Length: 320
Figure 1 (cartoon, rainbow, N blue to C red):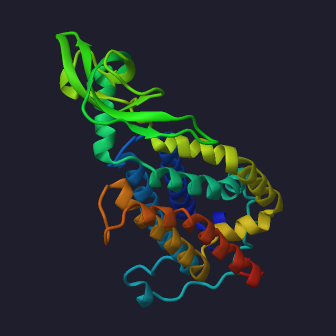
Figure 2 (cartoon, helix red, strand yellow):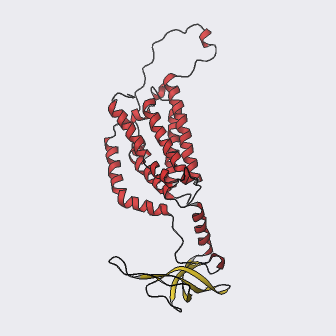
């Protein structure tokens, strides 16, 4: 079976390599669309862990394909078999376009996914946002009953108009009856006074949630993804198209064939990136840091590809 796949490859290298790439792409896609809106990012971490597991399986399968399976027990005691001329190895298969697209566009997508994870809201903020959405947290106008302190006035400037931020008591018409509730940092264009209408957010059926001056916070990952699409999208497309155009079939064939000095460091870099994402994904701190390691993780896909390309550039016959 091994010879049907050419030297250094086998059915198991193909299977484990496919599962490795598929799991990684699944983790990237789930991170980009926000399958888990807040930690723990169970689905994303599970798929990334599966990709790391299959990467290890691919390394083992590739090593076995290179050196061959171990001799069965007692084989050395048998008389040598008749020497025959080895069969001519089959012509190497032409790599499909799928690997070309994965190699070209996987790096920018993985970088974007790491940045989206880095901006994931905390679990406490995410659960509160879900609770407010289920309770019907919406915009309403209410009247000021009285001020609890002097207004904080921000004078007009070249960029903004003047405004006031003031802690006030407002009368909220809940379903169970009106209540006087404290609204912190009420925003008004004019100096606040009793009877003035102000914008608030609250749930009419849940007075225990209080009132606020802002809507339910959106998932920061969506904002980051939109900004990346606007600012970096064209560059990602241009860079990916250039890589796809310049990637030759023989280069992709060498990429699929395991070489320890090339693939092991690249896989170690990617594994380090996965580990750096865990503090945000599972919501714990390392040396008081949580988001900084996630930002560093966004650099690892590019570093891994740079290492592979540099190795192939310095060693043209590597893996040929």
